[in-house]
Length: 250
Image (cartoon, rainbow, N blue to C red; front, side):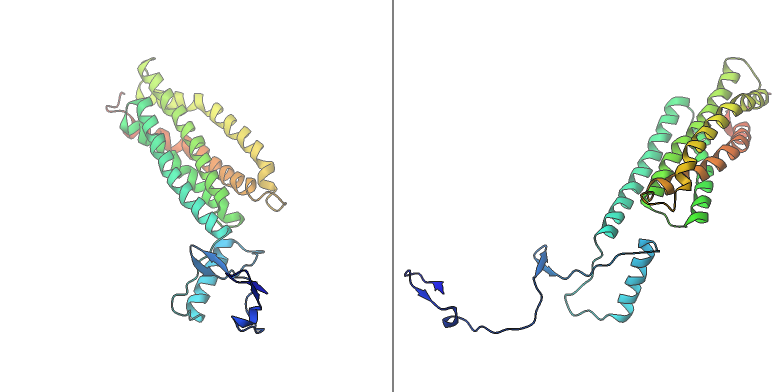
């Protein structure tokens, strides 16, 4: 029975036809549009490769009716948004690092020399990532950003000490490079070694539960530390001798 405007009651069958039929249990809407959710969990594979395969199969085998379209959400949507945000923040971080270096040294070329440590660190991070699972995740991107700071610090230690020996102790360019590199070798190696030893247990727990964030990040930092520390002691002195000073002092 349903109520009428004159406070009476009539059966529902008087105003509608009632029959049993098959249909969805409920209708879901988003942004004033109907939607159907198809969901699944991903196991033994990375999320990005699964999404790429689904997209290719849908484009090849599924003919969607007019006004129908597919959106990938949930974890993939969150990861995509986080990736875009971290990429933007990475670019801003690199710009901020360069501006800070220029304010520190007051020299455009020396600032660029220190920034050379970034690709040197990327080499080891990418190789370490490729050796493990070969998938770039949010955690590994955070590891790269952290690695940038560590690599730039090593360059600052080297270049600032070269400047000190040349300007304050009146060393020649070659003397400053040789003495400065030898004097800064131990501090750089000790810092890299302590950082690496601290991250090693986290990197080794890659197959353990609840290590989805810390393990990839640690692996990237460890790989980048190895190449950045080794190549920093070779590349930076050579580049500084060639382009570090406006005029070479013999």
